[in-house]
Image 1 (cartoon, rainbow, N blue to C red):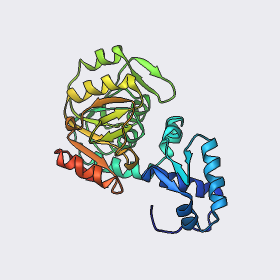
Image 2: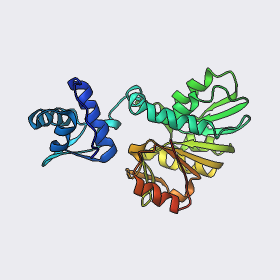
Image 3: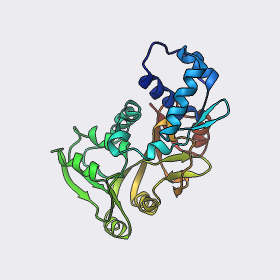
Image 4: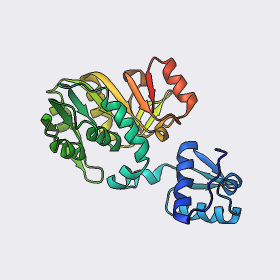
Length: 262
């Protein structure tokens, strides 16, 4: 648990920071939170109980653990606001790895959308994507020559398509680079996603490019989710935040993955 103190903030901001701590560390203790925020343990218990009622954490003896379910229940807009500064730093680094004239496959998710926004000064790009939000963003960039929005079964909540039709269309293309996001990145379990319908599509995307750039904010590192996309050795670069789980990052580096911390 971090040893810095945060005092004199309102209840909404305090609960947001509790969730930030929980996402980074996986577990929080009432006694630690009481010291960090300079308030009573009774008040902290009230915060944790309130957050549990919203489905954002699970209470355990002495504290709470992360369920991570709250993130998946968010709208795309709410997910864009979660860890947005961390995602923006990742996006800037990923955009620096794109060259003018590249053909890029861009997967769905909020971090790839942030990457798309950072490509405004790149020229003569071709974008292939299964994300409506990414296609929409790319459509406003006059420097992009072609935007290919793959067809398929539409997930309305998160605005992406997947399925056999999507894979069939993807198979027509070859690209230089892939900007890929995932819900979990683990040395043991590889790259995983909450949405099993996307797993096969992402496997095909990886097979279709010369370079795979995995963009994942720090809360994804060390997590394993419902469906495996690929083993970790199938990616070339991982861009994540400097506060990511050090043991996991070191294990990934030992596997030969180039990890860029931002």
